[in-house]
Length: 256
Image (tube, rainbow, N blue to C red; front, side, top):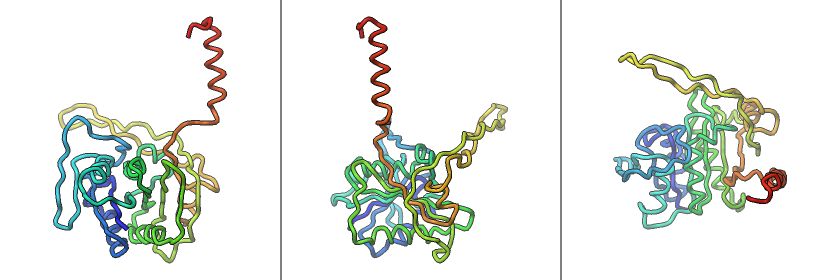
């Protein structure tokens, strides 16, 4: 098996190193990651300039671009041999609920899926203990499962691992995405030159975070695995929207 590893925290992230070390010997591993932290980059592609790729002494490669750039370049140009799957992480913090909209970690995985590869995004629900080794072991366990898994087209697995030693995990739960409360307000500050600047406020706490959600699973000490579908169409709203549009057409005298 040939596996591409990437992330959004940068090529020197401890989570990426732990993931590589945890998967050593399982398959042929290649690492292509951003040259710096790109947390919150979502699915951005760099289209206004060429990208630079740098080889590091440990064999990792970095790109002066986004997580999506990294996976796109790796699959579509940097290597002659094809990959079998993409693993993105280990992110330094959780990617729960609404986080995945912004997450570069999830974006790297979804880019792999866009390019036809099964993909996993994995994050450590970091509480300061830094048990990246536990998260890496979870990924290896998932990859070693002999039973083939199909989550459907344009879908990935979003995995969140509690920040605990392996022996303290309570198990694995298949979950749905929860929902966060509204984010905290922007934080104003003044730069040394007297200009007003703003920090984006912290993410809200779990709002829809009850049993069955990813929030609940990790809070109870379980690994959360959520199948995420990239098709964002709200199918349940199609019929109502169609009726609404038809009313618009009538009110315009059929001129639309």
